[in-house]
Length: 464
Image 1 (cartoon, helix red, strand yellow):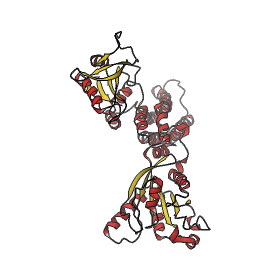
Image 2 (image 1 turned 30 degrees about the horizontal axis):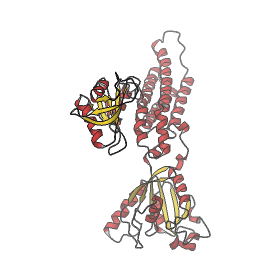
Image 3 (image 1 turned 90 degrees about the vertical axis):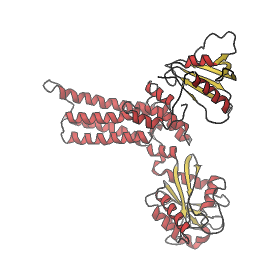
Image 4 (image 1 turned 180 degrees about the vertical axis):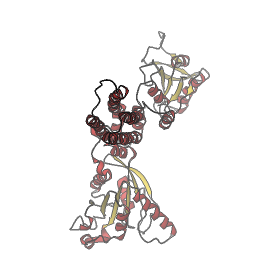
């Protein structure tokens, strides 16, 4: 493996910058570009920081820095590694990297350090993916899911299940390979029960997938309703800043506006849409069409009601008197919905929630004054999580790629169970077992292709 080099700290200026080497020539390159201050220095003692001068490509002093050498295999990548910790100015850090490259190191590719860690057995594939997910985690809960995977919880569970399938396959193959011997064959009832136990364990691993996915990518929450109901004002209130243009004129919002915010720990992609009504011009019609598509694809829809317009009589009506709200509810069919009675500072009905909100939660709020805004944020978070309010069992939740492999495992095991019940021959059952075990192996990288690894690691940052 060639020696690679990369900057491990983010672009831009900072208090410190780190340039990293990995490979068989890491110590040699470090020694040729770093001059320790200590007159008693003889050699780099592993894992110790030394202060000295780092040299640029011309051999001139570049910075007062710290250097450390870390011998493999007990390093992050499982190979010899070295780092120079210098001041974080872009020119300095780039100069350090340039010197490394001029001495024979190759510029690292995306995720190459983590890829080497996987190939050298320092971590399984689920742990390697957790590294990138922790770096990009948008919430504390997403960070915890990533940390649990980095600790190897998911990998150990999957490996144990794969070993159970391998043991079953060994018992099945023993009877198939030695039919003339007096070998005790696995009873079909016991075989089916063992398969069902593995299926149950896989379902448990999948239980927290949707919640973990929401915590990682953020929930798509769409604000829909009539013009002038206060959707843009509500967006600004939840964001804590004026992002959407708000006027007294109907139809100010012509297109959807999407922003990220945090709802009590849940990352949310909050979308303000054009008010629903009979379009008065082509541009507004296009904006409403885009808004309808956002509602249909949302994780949750907040239907904003104009409390001032509906008033006391509207709250007591038998059906929703707001045609735009009825249209939004129809568009959101099958998705979690929250009614938001806006402008409660102007009109807070004596009967609340209105009887026509049956089946859906309803909150009162004033986007103008901020009254009850915190309560709305809590309820909106609960609605957005929907059925995924429960945390993943033991904090172990697969990402989308891992979940797809686990779903495929379940499909293989269901077919295997049907084969057992139908009296299929044991050699055919052994093929099903092998397929299911290979699916599990894809989660940890025990089974996979170079193309799969390329897809995974190309999404990493350079230097990790």
